[in-house]
Image (cartoon, rainbow, N blue to C red):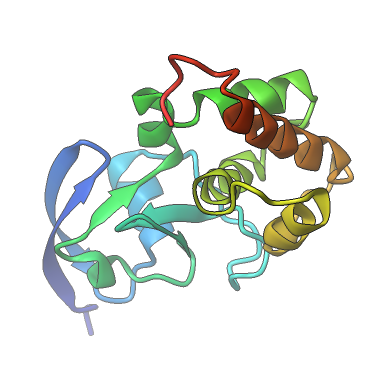
Length: 167
């Protein structure tokens, strides 16, 4: 028996994509295998680690728990698209400056969570940042560098130190 396919049409980053997909194919597998967008990683494949995160219609979702067919008619943003647009520039620079990248496996998911924090929780304290990133696993940094990087962007945005950077 062959697996059922379904035609979907969605916007991925700045590109309209129309493809037949297996009805049980996860979004992150579709992005990685069909579109060669490999910035989101497969970690636990149970929605626990956060390495597979992408944005769907402006909300951070777990790509390993979201089916590609669920994104029909939606806008999916990946780490590649957000990086190219400059939206993550200050966060990426802060992660680099604070040595919060380490091996890089969790970085794409962590950066999407960080973007959500700076966009929606601009007054977050260090404890609140820790709470917000608690759904993202990192085995390299011990989280202090990640918290410091996010905190530095929050402070810089509040004080206007990032003139000319996309917000």
